[in-house]
Length: 186
Image (cartoon, rainbow, N blue to C red; front, side):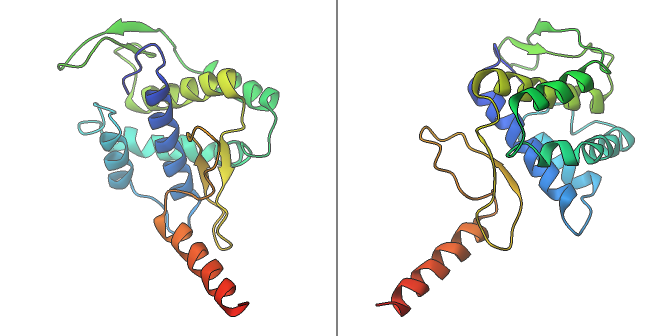
């Protein structure tokens, strides 16, 4: 992931892909490595396309081990979040370097070039989460308002008005049900 001075856009993209993966890992059907690879590649993790299958599978396993932590974000305190993020970061080899490659602008790599793909992804996610908690606390993390969904979302709106996860069916179902209820009551 390209982080240019921890830009808000890159933090948002990293946190959104992290929560998409967390939501997929929380689902009844397990997420496979191909879907994880596609999500990461689509969000700018340039090593995703060529990463070994075992390292992509470890991304799922490592995020799976953190599911409860991520799921606690909407209800947790900033200090609780900082505590577990710092504990996870302590296990990683963090060696920030400013680099440019493949036509990309100058950006920061949090891990050394020898880091495994899963270490890189986990470091990027944790650093984005740390930056978000420093800037805004955990207030931008929420749980989908649809009655049959408990997926997480990251609210990057200016006024904090997001209510639904990234699945467009959740908002559609809720709005349709609300509309029908209003029509019945008139």
